[in-house]
Image (spheres, rainbow, N blue to C red):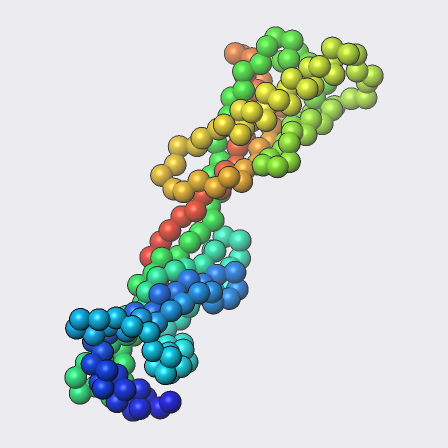
Length: 209
């Protein structure tokens, strides 16, 4: 359909404006729908859809390519035809979604026995969501029954505190997280193990047209 034919059909149906609701990301255009509004009604129209399904991309940029940081965008394209115009006007209002990582210290309270076990035997600790807790040892040794119990106590303690950690943020928090002790184990004077938490949030900003 040519633009002149789309304008004729638009006027015949007494359309005031059209709204294209869309979402995109993950390297593709996802769901989108065109809705046409008259003074008293709204409806879908396959014939006009076929025209705008091509024409909208000549006037509007949709940012579909995700990179792990930028996730995608969603919003509305307003399509209008002013009286006497020879083409439609397109205006996008949308928000982009970003994946941001925030870093915080988590202090895990240890008993004297747990702290001593870590200082004597552990080089670093790491893990994350659906990964459990990895305790890496600084030396080779045969564990006693009590040391095996201490390892299990520490795994449960660290996993529980990491899972329940809620960072101070105004953004939308995701379930995913990672944690690490850093290159060197740090236990402060209060017998608190210092763990670095990496939490991910969704951040929303206004998209460019």
